[in-house]
Image (cartoon, rainbow, N blue to C red; front, side):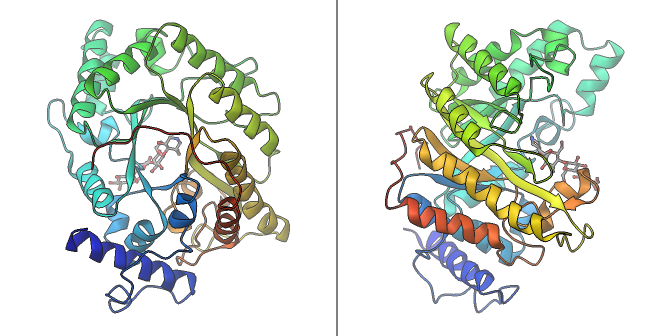
Amino acid sequence: MDVRRRSVLAAGAAGAAVAIGGAGTASAAALGAQHDHRDPDSLRELAGKTGLRIGTATSPQALTIPARAAIVAGQFSLVTPGNEMKWQVVEPTQGVFDWSGADQLVAFAKANDQLIRGHTLVWHNQLPTWLTTGVGDGTISDSQLRDLLHQHITTEVSRFRGKIWHWDVCNEFLTDSNPSMIDPNRFWAAHLGEGVIADAFRWAHEADPGALLFYNDYNIGGEDGSNAKADAAFTLVRGLLDQGAPVHGVGIQGHLDTQFGWSPQRLQQDIERYASLGLKVAITEADVRTFVNNATDQVPTSSLELFAQPYEFSEMLKAALAVPECVSFTVWGFTDADSWVPGVFTGEGYATPYDVNLNPKPAYFAMQSDLRLAAFGAPKRAHTRTPHP
Ligand code: G3I
């Protein structure tokens, strides 16, 4: 282990210990040298006993705050750039690339012995304005759009070749209706047809044959009472496999809300069903939102929700642990201070395992307890290829 990595790990363990102790922001001294081993009670160490990778979405901005960086390094063995690998960010002007944020996260992960989930190559959101404007005013034809997408995937995946464990190749192509289907009105299918999905997987595979390629979506893991969207996701990936497209996994986002019903048993069955196709499964964006007093403090407004929030986190994690093909469990931001939820769902928040002051919440301790118990009986994770160090 080189000196740099050792010091970051030390910061991770110490910072996590401070946060768990509820003492607030870690001091410079606490981030120093006293812990030169990983905290055996950290999520990452406990999850490692079954081979499960436990991850968080994060950003370079968050990692400039030592207490947050310490938690990411100390608690998680997998990192997802929340926004930094999206097309809007990496190519803000046509032909002018900005890899700075993605590079920082990749370097952080390498220094902390973490794997990376690349997110996301083909999505209808967070596209560069030059692209959507050009398509809108007709200066970019559909055939040019197809070439641009091919080039985008090739450029980005090649640039990080050998460094990415999973790529979320295609994100959120399905409707929320019953029955669910590929949404013909969403940007990519509308312009390039449904065949763009298989093409995207082929292009990504050509650019990095070692990366595991995922289809990623929400409401495909027990959230939807009818399971219609999970059925559609199953049909989609089975069809891709039948065509010989290089699909290796399904990403279940896992954005839950305590006000809606949700079935952990159905989640486990859905994971098993995707796995029955020979695919790996990842929980990619887990969070559990609930009603809160305000967006700043994010204190739940009912004790029932205080109970439901950690319960749903725990049940999601247990369903993942029960199926060996489920190889990772990622939370979509580890602290309420960074969560996307209050900005999108008015009146809701408290969606992550740490509060706005970086104190671990009951959800953190529930997950810690589940992982500790899992070490005694949950199946070891199925083998996957991992990037070269
Ligand atoms: O960077 C700009 C900043 O310069 C500006 O001042 C600020 C003003 O609003 O916006 C900043 O950009 C924001 C960006 O996040 C970075 O913080 C965008 O407005 C905001 O829309 C964007 O939200 C992201 C959202 O995807 C976009 O749909 C969230 O951070 C991100 O967590 C979220 O992630 C998605 C997954 O990729 C796919 N699944 C659903 C999930 C939640 O929406």
